[in-house]
Image (cartoon, rainbow, N blue to C red; front, side, top):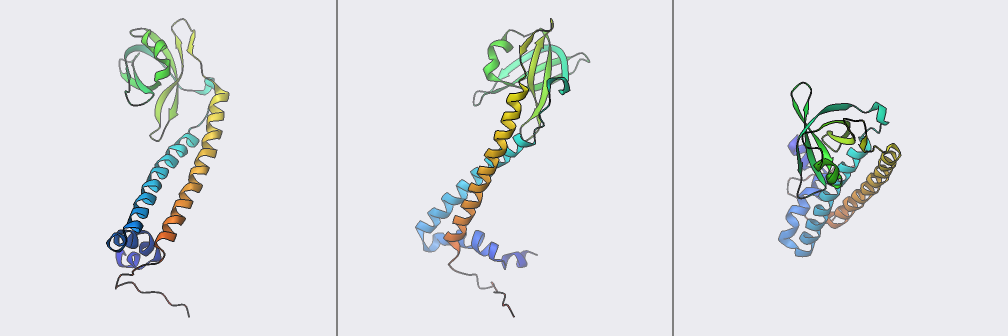
Length: 192
């Protein structure tokens, strides 16, 4: 199986020549390093965009809810997220993703009973707080269904653009490496 793969043009152009190009051409090595770096970043962004597309947008009455007492609130220093630890009625603690922009609201809720409306978010389908109401029934964080639909539509367009960029980078890698050395074991297939 490995020998078969090593005898394909895919292996020759996208693996063998980029690895061996640095021996003979520094500009070609630099071009390959840049293109592969851009490709891997774009693939990561594309997967994140796909996770946003696959997130199902529901109306507020269809979202799962949990009620409990806020035990801990923490915020990530590197991004706009955070974690809400909620002590549920069955004495288990559940953690949910929160948005740091709502920090003023969350900081007033420590040791108070709340009800959260949850939605799946991100690549790992983490549960995040989409809406929040206090024990009086006042909505402190309002869920905006139309905005969520717009984000889903924009994510689709964003992922499609990134996909086209990925194809373009693959094409550039192909152009950079279509000519060059072949390993001794490489056998070209002849058409009859």
